[in-house]
Image: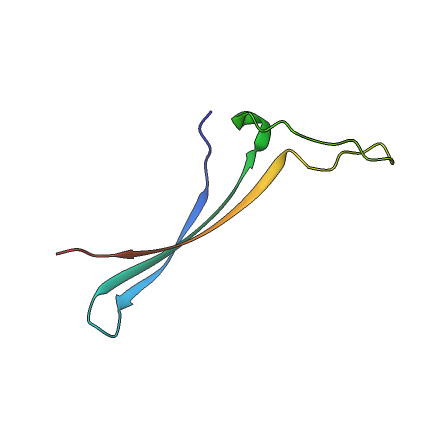
Amino acid sequence: RKESFDVTYEGSGKDPWGNEKAGFSATGTINRSDYGLTYNAVLETGGVLIGDEVKVFIEIEAAKQA
């Protein structure tokens, strides 16, 4: 299964040493069970301890190489 994430370009500029940098952020969700992570525990109330959906938040800084 291929996951997809919403990616946002946050901007670019030079750092104090003159290196070009660009920033990105990404958000998405994955299902634990899609990756074989099936452990869970039943609670006394009848629910389960761990949900299957995992929210992912990523912050990326990329450096331009010469």
